[in-house]
Image: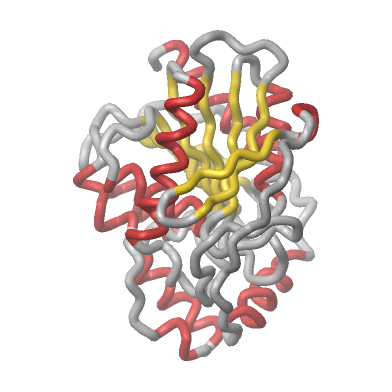
Length: 301
């Protein structure tokens, strides 16, 4: 694996794909979901906290109730690193993989609190966050959703008093986290954006070309990360990861956002993982990237 060129270079990861068979499946899943409408979410039932080894459930209340599952490293200081993770649009199945990533991160990185958010309107098969899930066509990155996730981050910060905050998002979750950076100045020190549809208009045009489903051409109230770049503090550090074989959020979307960040004098590091497709948050390269973020913030690089 080649070294990352610090200060805005590209790294080509030689990671062998374990997911080449997903190339066809990814588009199929999105095609199946494009014609589905989502019913309004029900309020999740009260539930006791889970044992620490399995993560602790924390409900955040804004105008809605939002589920967050928190994992802690074995030894925490008074001011740990806080990592907040948002899953993708997950058109085919209830999202649970964000919990696995959070658990792995807390186990692998010392002095860390990793909190995985269940986005508004989504069910993980056990609980449901309030709100509207939408049609998974880029229609769920709205100001209301961004505000709900921002409240979750604020409550986590108030609870853990972190010395650093890192936002992590996959696919649609990365768009929401990028929207947070641009609409809530100073909410985080850094972000890891994985498989990001950061140019919303270009991404929806791409998906319409692939699927031909009319949902992709309907107007949406979503925020596009690309339009908010100028409002991100220049002190923010951003890492981006995308698979070279991603059929859902192609490399060009990552490249366009990274170029806009550089033009605004924001440090961005981009990694293209060779042979990997779209669903790569649980690939080793994603956790390696988070370790890079933590290391770079710790050294001030």
